[in-house]
Structures are given as structure tokens and as C-alpha cells.
Length: 255
Ligand SMILES: [Zn+2]
Image (cartoon, rainbow, N blue to C red):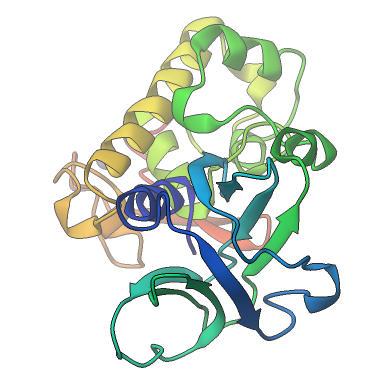
């Protein structure tokens, strides 16, 4: 499932490929696109891309934006020349120069929508601050008074935006905190370590283009399956159900 590092990697790909291209039209199928609420966007030029949490925004010269969410399996691919659409193409943004941007999504949970105002969208969705650049001060503010379990908090997009199941496990592993600990039990030093781990893990993942094969050897991510051992101490990795999904952790390294 695309989390913040995957979406940021796609955003950088878009910046390299479609910046300044002019849209000729958008086609596709529901529910990926919503044809009734898609205004004519021909002759609109892409002026910028940005991201908040797991949402990717493509700004147009009209001041409006396209917003993309990648669901479980969404991805984008620029096609030039006569190449045919890749498998599972659900929507296509065509450009005036003949190139096309294909939105592929085998599971169909991804969405491409037009919105009049990107900032209003972030407010309406009540998204928390973006996790990639969150400061220690902001993190201490948003966690103050919370009794939530720490992993639940990290997954709550209204509290902090961009973290999903896989990176939450890595962040807690790097911070040495068990997933079911209550935020209320963590002292300010622990919370500061957690804030630093969020930025460290996400920044490192983005720098490595969300390529799991390039992640540091002491990360938990390659060991998130039963029977695996902790890359730091060699103890068997444990798992526990949180929010209907497995959280993996090291019972020795995480307290
Ligand atoms: Zn360990």
C-alpha cells in the first residue's frame, strides 16, 4: 500500500515528467474517476506538484488541482509514442504533445479527482500535519493529553498524515517503543525520540526512492513476517494485532 515515501517518490517522478505539459483530456472509469464531477480541463497546464500525507496534488494554471490517492495498488506511468496502456489502467490524462499519464490500479481503491482549492481540501479532510517534515515541537503539541496507543496514533491521518502500517512499525522499532504502549506513558524524551524516528525513517525511505532493497540492513521492514529475527539483537520478531492489522516488533529492543 503506497504510504508517504511511495507517494513522494511518485511526486518526484511527476515533477521530472509532466511539469509544464498541457492537458488535452482525461478519460477513465468509475470509481477511479468521477466523470460527473470532472470539468473540462483541456488546455490547462501543469504548474506544480505537491503532497500532503498520502495525497498527491497536481496544480493547474487555473489555480485548481487534480488530487490523487493511490489506495492499495495505485501507480502512475508516463507513456510516450505508440506504446499501449499498461495493465490495470483505470484513468488516462492525455497531453497536447501526444504523451499520456496512465493511472494503474489493480485493486481499484485509488482515486483521481478535480478540486477547486488544494488548501481547502486539506482542511476539509481534517488531515494532520505532514509526517515527513514534522518538528519535535509540533509532535509534542499533537500528542499532548492523548491516551491513544502509539501505533494507532501514528496511523490516524487526522493526527499526523502519511504513515501507514509498514512505516509505523519501522518508526516504532527505530524509536525502541512497543506498538501497544499508550502515548500517555511516554515521557517527553521518549516522545522526542519518536518524533526524530518519524523524520529519520521517512526521509531515509524517500532518499532511497521507497526501494525496500536499498533500505538499511538494521531496519525491521525486511523482517516483518513470522519466523524472522530482529536485525539488531537476533531475537525472534513478535507480532500483535492493532487496528485489524499485524504490528511487528522486537520484544527485546522495544519497550
Ligand atoms: Zn531486537
